Image (cartoon, rainbow, N blue to C red):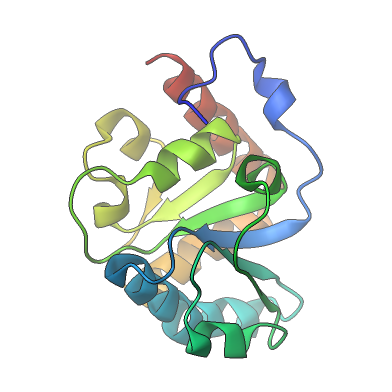
Length: 173
């Protein structure tokens, strides 16, 4: 969709948040594939150790074999392709954007803000978005990112408020 969706009330982007964490994109793209591997192999085990029932959705086109192989294990679901990204993101508690590579601006944070999701990201994930970056929980290491994710999951009101702030910033553009 277009960003931001002017004229749509912030509450319209909020529905039941039954997906704890999500990462999405064109999954064959090297930066997204690296981010997904970083999430699954380094960040996710730390989150699951603290919250064993936590769920993670990885969605997008062209999921590689290794990614499809982790689907259905350890709370991970891979949807490739991801059906109705906008509706799915409105179900996500915390969008995780663990990008370490890539150029230009990441649409993931804009898409998450449009859906009023809380966001945890690396600095690379919020590049070119200073107004949104000011509202995002940023970390660089797996430990930093997991700690920020867990903070938002343990304090759902804080996550909801961060999502509302992100949506207001996106709407102000």
